[in-house]
Image (cartoon, rainbow, N blue to C red; front, side, top):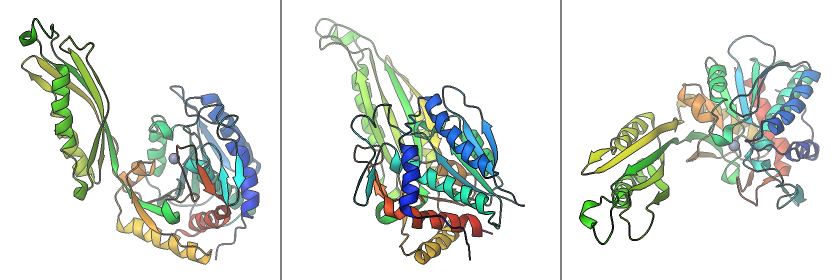
Length: 375
Ligand SMILES: [Zn+2]
């Protein structure tokens, strides 16, 4: 039976509070790196082998910490960035505790989960716990904008891993995640021909009318039974009511359940581009997070986690989610990935964002049991 002692939820919350009070908007590399520095120092202090990958393109660094051992590792990955700008703490969302709820910017998505991952690995190192496999902890700077700079290291470390654990926020009822939809993003630019709406109507070609047709075509691709959705927003176009609009455009969000559907829908949307009767439609973009599909190996990981959760006194339901995470990248490589292992709570990216802090210790214990026991 695993033996790592993790401490009480109160103690975990006291330290998590320091992480929340260090604001880390994705767009401020220095702020994200400040929290990376703290993590690095704490891990080095317990003998962790830490590697720091320098940030680029205006994003912070990525931190990798490895524990000793042989064979394919267990990777546990969390992001330190949040969607909240500086000043959120001092303004509308100070850190505060109300009963079982602890509020603060990014506490639920996903400082609590990343802290639980960090703390589990730190305690395994500090206590010299023998795990079945080596563990690779990965803390990243840019998940909230689609992981442009951390995707490559995430995929590189996940390749050849035995399993990947992602402590993104738990869902309703504390659910973890065994599947997520793939996400596509497209931008549409339409060029028409402007003309006086009164004097020269016939010479004009309305980009707005072409956009309206395209929107209904894209909307018609939605197939709820098949798990496919599209959303067009925002849209723009035209200049004045008396001018036939020469330009219009939109963005498109696409969600799909499988790689094959992603390829099919991507081709359909990109296929709407072209030139007819004075109207030119250009479409750029494509799938940016591949679908994370449930496999028997993922169900096996979930079954283990559920057993540990029961031993720590709580239910661990399961959920398939529409939103993407870094788990999409690792699951698409065929590496068994279990997600949503972070803390319970609600309000990701919303002003009421909070965790249910008494769940910190039992959920952290499950994470730790998984890290120690996966063989
Ligand atoms: Zn997140």
